Amino acid sequence: MKMKKRKKSLKNLFLNSLRTKKEKGNKMLISVIIPVYNVKEYLEKCVDSVLDTSFRDFEVILVDDGSTDGVCPALCDAIAKKHSDIVRVVHQENKGLGGARNTGIEASKGDYLLFVDSDDTLIPDTLSILANKIMQTNSDIVAFNIFTENSNGERNPLNSNYAYYDKPFTLKEHPEFMLSLPNAWSRIWKRTLYTDNNILYPERAWYEDIRTTLKVFAKAESIVTINDCLYVYLQREGSIMRSSNIERNVEIIDAFEDIISWFKKESLFYEYEKELCRITIDNIFIAASVRVLMADTKHPLLKRFKDYTKENFPEYKSNEYIKVLPKMKKLAYKLVEGNHYKILKLLFTIKK
Image 1 (cartoon, one colour):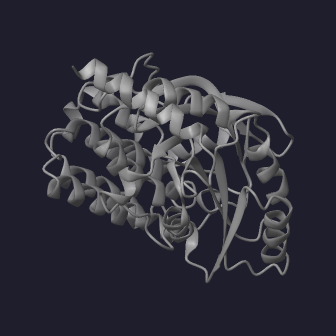
Image 2: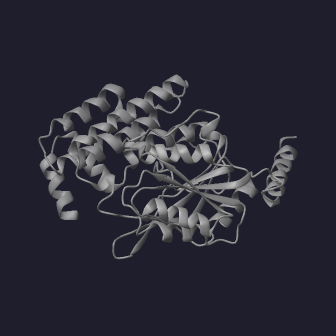
Image 3: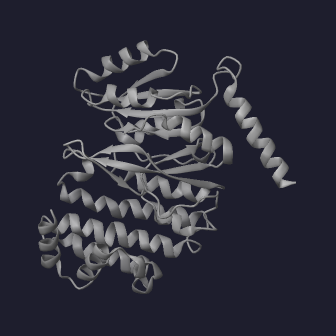
């Protein structure tokens, strides 16, 4: 009975994707949301990469988030005019990346959402690949891998997901999937995961992805992975998470307070406690500590990060995921645990 219902659902999804926008009342399969803020040198390349596809049942929403460069607002309008059948623009006062994504979600008409940062690009025909996987599986989330690209144009593949699964799965079946990179742009998401569960991105905050992605993972009924790199992430020295604003690293604690509170409210904390502990170790105990100690090995935030981990996960040292930490991350964990911050700073300085 379930198999017949699933086949019917897939058939309806496929037929729906073939209808014209007029027949569907402007509904479509995919909405691509691109937040825009002072990126005049990247925007056209980004949009062109999205449009480079044989798939047509999609829209592009440019959210101009109060750009101040004197170029981006007009450039967004020009792009929308040139591709008026596909591209729309929303202009708003600055709300940060999270606020711009929320605006895009609210304006979207697609059944699925793909977030693309305006300085990044898609591999040709990415939308066709994603649409085919959606039609095959009707999954709530389709996850894929990415390329990182440096200032010299050199690309390196990066596995965004903890593992590759060739069949759709649930988070209960594979809770380790929560350990995947928490970015918004290496997955395509069913829109109702956000709208039906009142999940929003925080405005003007660091760590907006991890605050939101873990919640959406937990609400998905079906997830599937693609073992290909479909997205090109540009590593820019000026980007927020690569900047040296040390004091703002304390916001990682605010982010995890939000995450842990939400999982407890949804009665999901103990079900995913091991995974949440490992994510805390990755992002607070290790990563945030490294960012801070590279500037100051005696900064008080270092103790605060360790204390936060101990307070929320008293048994963190026995977490089974520590055993499978990558070699460099495991070394960093041991050095932080032993307060050997100067040695860790030296290692990362040499690595650079």
